[in-house]
Amino acid sequence: MGTGVDDDIKRDFLQEAGELVQRLSEQLIDLEKSPDDPELLNAVFRAFHTVKGGAGFLELHPLVELCHVTEDVCNGLRSGQVKLDSTMMDCLLQSLDQVQLMLDSVAKDEALRAAPEDLVDALRTLAACAAAPAPQMVVAAPVAPAAAPARDMITDDEFEALLDQLQGKAPAVVAAVPAVEHPSPACGRGEGERVSVNVGGSSQASSTAPSPPAPLPQAGEGSKKEPAETQVRVDTQKLDRMMNLVGELVLVRNRLKSLQQRSSSDPVSRAVAELDFITRSLQGAVMQIRMQPIKRVFSRFPKLARDVARGLGKQIEVELQGEDTDLDKNLVEALADPLVHMVRNSVDHGIELPDVRQRAGKPAAGRLMLAAQQQGDHILITVRDDGAGIDPDRLRQKAVQKGLVDPAAAQQMTPEECLDLIFLPGFSTKEQISDLSGRGVGMDVVRSRIRELNGHVVIESKVGQGTCFRIRVPLTLAILSALMVHAGGRRYALPLSPVRDVFVLDETKVRKLDRWDVVMVRNEPLRLVYLDPWLQAAASDAPRHVAVVTVDEERYGFVVSEVRGREEVVIKPLGASLRGLSGVAGATVMPDGQVALILDLSGLVQAYRQSLISAQTAAPRPSNLENGHG
Image 1 (cartoon, rainbow, N blue to C red):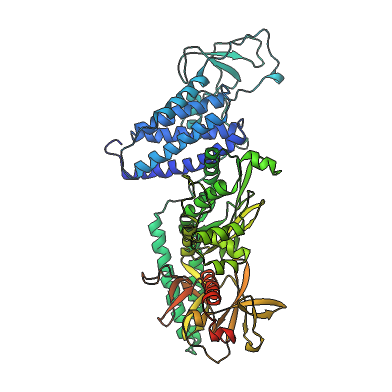
Image 2 (cartoon, rainbow, N blue to C red; image 1 turned 30 degrees about the vertical axis):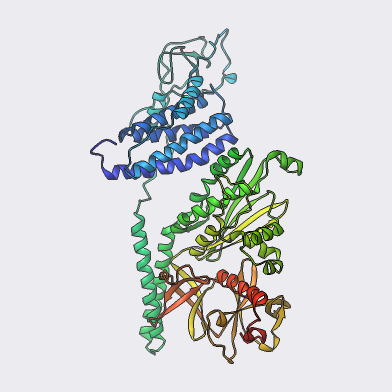
């Protein structure tokens, strides 16, 4: 990079170039489906051209060279001299990958390495094909205006002048009369002479006189006023600090509300109520600032799936739904790696080879769908494929062979529990190790990362039909609506979103069903999860409450000593001694200054289910569970 370049200029370049590269990933995949779309062709060309211009200013010569030769290929596509095929698309996508690597190096202040020679040579060959002279046109007679094809392409100088015109810098020089242009045999892009053949309504077969400039668009004739700048770029650390301050404000608000309940002063009550309203409004506004569309994550997957599929000799079609769904920026960044692995896993493990799919009566190309939708204060993300599916019995056998599950316990597992084995550390069904998956790591890391986000992931699969992963994560990592409960003399916070009902437990109606204590609620059995034994606390004879929650698409009843009510809590990270503990998602500070743990409902269910299996296979059930007094 040239010396003396301001850091702000470099930062702005990286920001703009990063956004262009992100859009290019989508645009190139769309272009493969619609190779003759002139808007896409122009957008791809302009993106590489813009990155090249910024790189030239910063003297990033390897990046300039790569963008320039890629730009030449795109220009050939725009002119119609060459047609897009899979080989050319592979080169364009590889060029995009190299551009991203170079931008990463610039961000790290590392010296740029030139793009691989074989890639540059392939791009130059494609560009040379695009610059090859076309057959000379012979005009025998004037052509009627109605049959005149519009000229789709303009020269580079005309394009730059048009940009200047749109920015109010210079008059346009684009010819008003359409013309078909052919480069002379000696010219490359932007070099040599051009021979223009007039195919408009003129009675002359050819003309060497310059065409008059196109009139500027007038108001009301399709012109658009340049909108005022409505966005500013803010350092994410400032947003994080703002959110932390709002979190502290929420804690103070909760403290004041607790004190206000002991006061009979109407002015104090009104002041606290006003503070409560303002705090909630401020909290919502700051959360909206931090929100970003999940498209920032989803946009990379069509290209990723295509690259993986081509490497395996497979075909794939990717469908994205709910791309405009907003969630916390930290979640957008944190979800990237888990979703990347799940997409790779679906293409590698799930989607079959084309001939196998056709023999099974399926289309040759596999289908992968990523969808996002908001559900209350959570986001549901779905990754679904129409591949071979997962056989629960095969998972059971693999788990036993690897020594991950006791044989006796494995025989007691339901198909759903067998599917859940895929998340065990060290578990893999891949017979042949590849660079994509099958190294015995991955899905356990995915579940761990999702749990770190206070979310959970479940799997559904049918042999021969496909597999579906469902991920639920909160909208934000900072503030949580919680149901406050007491269990074993301590206070705990249950995420409120999955809570469906609360009732007093009638101990006389508790029954046994497939290892579980159950109670009938609305004519359906509800499996009970006792928090007291899990928390190693002594049982009480006092009436207990049950919080009915939905976990992994199933209902469970969490038995607690008492339900205290709803509370907005600020999530704090756990200390090193508790981090990673199953069933605990975080901590919060209560209005009286005491600390309460935030429980991970999915982790609690998993731990409790495993304790029931272990108790049945290795030791007698605890007496407090046998008599329903857990």
